[in-house]
Length: 491
Image 1: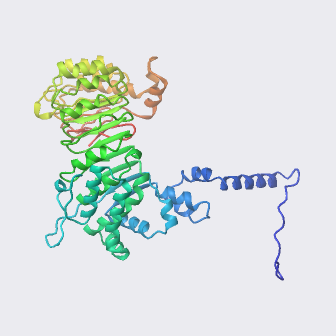
Image 2 (image 1 turned 45 degrees about the vertical axis):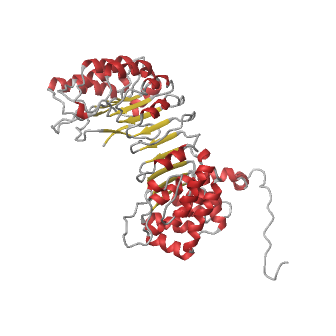
Image 3 (image 1 turned 30 degrees about the vertical axis):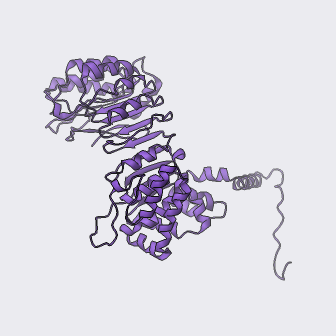
């Protein structure tokens, strides 16, 4: 019903023939309406926006709010720093409809383990008392006990999450919000509540730190079949039973990384989808044998390899492109050379850095083996070798390995060089950096890489003099990034 003085909006009519401006405006309006009626298109458009813009889009209209909110929380770092606590508070105080939109697929957890407080009447148990077969005292003792018993009898995940909710509800809403705002040991129940609500949809977990009670709860609540990426960079003492319990429920892993010693860890024998495996610590012999069964493995990094048992099993990894065996104590002639003979032609990145305490020399035989058996290597690390070294060694590597873009020869003593050696290696690197000098055998993709990515040479000597634009390094170890490209970097 119209009131006095009100005006009815004029009806929408098609633009007149010949009015190009009106026709374009009409077409644009129709296209915008089509997009707004298609949630998939809206989500695709918003996926290219920054987090700051997503916050603005979420306030525009009802069509933008759900996808903007979901994208804002698609990745989440749960941490105990002020920024992390503010985000925890935002989640805990959100309404049911908003919480339903918060379904992160990638989560990093950085909860610092609080120092023990002797004045507390209830103390957290040792992880050795919290394995899947038993419980102990502590903030989430009941949760751990139920989860441990469930691990033995195969109770559903939902029952374990219900026990976590009990700990959360015991503190009350105001108590949990205060605990998050202030930080400290009392954060465990609200953090456990958050993990219980989001764990089902998370596909990628990165654990940089968790106190013992939360670690066991997290290991219990992870949705094993849905977990594709698992990186555990730190865990409490005695947490191996929980790690093994978690591994047993993750058959679809594509990326697995353990940044501490793997003693007591039991790997799955069947991980058909695993593509990247990083174990930065001694690996038990029996577990090394299982790696040979990971037929789809493309990137492998193991540190502190002391026994040849399990190395022959790697010969069958026909998809392997990146092989890093750092701090190795293996005989070159009987172990390393057969391994390179089996896999060398398919490798793009190689690290064969020995333990520096062994004082192994980088002789011409090892260099010739790498050049002849691994012709396609693009990134190479031969660190920690002892003895005098001349620039003729890297020059030979660059000359014979036509695709080599990054070379690291750090540690074990600096290079001895003269001006003739320097001019030789500089000529080789400058030639490699010049795309116009590429030979006919160089592929188009490698030619494009030459145009965008210069050669990097990590070396060490006492002089501050640069070499072909590469400054000397003082670090005695190279490092590998575990991103999609696994670029060789320097600490």
